[in-house]
Image 1 (cartoon, helix red, strand yellow):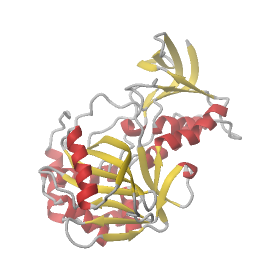
Image 2 (tube, helix red, strand yellow):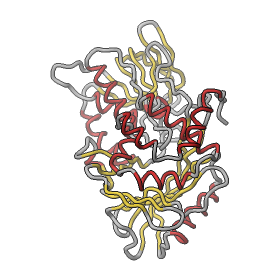
Image 3 (cartoon, rainbow, N blue to C red):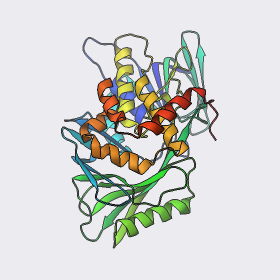
Image 4 (cartoon, rainbow, N blue to C red):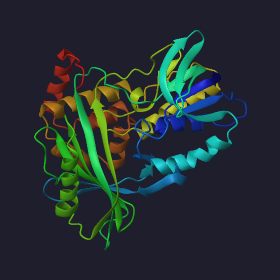
Length: 395
């Protein structure tokens, strides 16, 4: 048995970020002891991931960025693309391996942070804190007692929701024999892909050079595809839509992100909290998570250092979540044409303002102005329908 003031469960973006923010001494502030519990190599360890976000100016993790861009492009199924300059924002891409390589040395040097590889079997409240039961890679069991526990492990099932879609994707990191990409521009949504019967699909291109990029096929729909379905979808997009030839696939990436209006409880015990995607850091309408979890872990770390009760704050405002619920319902019901809606927004709203809106950084007046650029009738009908819809468990 061992003890710490703070136990952080999970070594993904949320767990590493919180441990990193708590590492080391800050003059005039408390320095809590921290144990970061990471799953051993195997199915419980988070897979390699690529995270994207946008911000103005230099950022905390810039040294680990794979690339950054100043322009984005959205392509309708037919016709000319909509181009947008992000200034003063930059769209940034960071890969999980590079993120860990950046924060890992700081954690290793920190006298108050300890990293432990173990499978967490149970987390339970006890008087004055919480007890975490662990199983080491060699099978030995142990118990960690902590004043506070922050759990970032994925849920076994989603809470009941009125609407749930999945953002599921498969991507190739490719290298071409000849220049094929604009290194300054992200292909944010390319709707020249075949559209599914339910939901929408698009291509997504993140160039890391003139001859290298992450090329993804993405769907917002009720169900994921088969492995062969994803492979064929990316192959079609790369070969037939983008016209790439002489392409070498360096690595692949697959993921599923729930887009749901289900409430995601951040407190599950007197001393046990959830952070990251399971704590509501994912923006339901977009699937972006990294910026939300940074806001959340920054607030938690500040509370711990100041001796306050460290309840994770909502990563997104109630107004943002309400607007997302309307959009999800409108998409899931088929009342709005998804490609037309997103192309219309990017064509009619200045790109920096739209990205701030998608990250919850706009005021009510700006939110209303964006809402007026959507199909008002179908969106209003969806909003009026929501209060009467039951919340059902997701499949």
